[in-house]
Length: 254
Image (cartoon, rainbow, N blue to C red; front, side, top):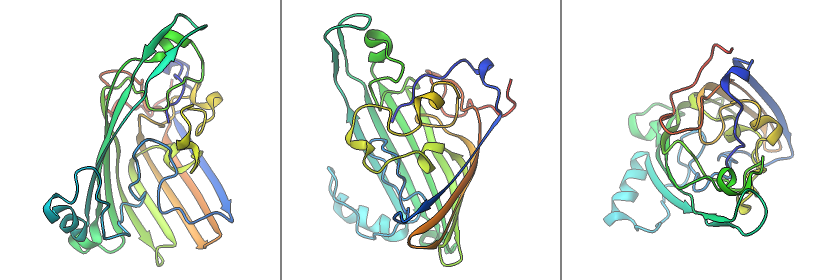
């Protein structure tokens, strides 16, 4: 999911973004609801299924299974799109952005005996041009995976569960659209409207794909049909441009 372009930082007045919601009669959220291509690591960094999927490269001679048994789950997913603007907009033309989404999730209980703890690190390597800016001129942008950052760190956080896993906390570099505003079925569509609303993503440099910022998120799940989510995030994740490798966030506001 790619957000619409943010306004210049000087126009962003909020230094922190606070978000919260209540989910009723929803499934328990063991995984991120973000429709970003390929991102299927558990959001708490814990690995519930000890048998890895074979994937394109197989089981690496059994190494993949042994890593997961130890609590380490690496992944890499490549996605590409081809768009052609045949009429209207700025001009006719074709763009073909691509994105390599890769990272690792660690179950620290399996790895070092730290009960209920996890660690997650993910990154993006992107290429291609922005068809919306070059050919179409639409505000909400057509591609849901284009990133102008070239290469950037995305998630980098520690997590901890409490009270028989009914309370989940994560702290580090995180994205608001991993925890809020995402849709389980949005990944079926190419348009980037499924997630943060364009009125938000086009006006506030909040930490959403493809950039994160320091923050904390907590989820309380007292039953299988009810959960409460709240989080606080640095309100400016920096410009989505080449050279921002994921650490150009700001907290002071302007």
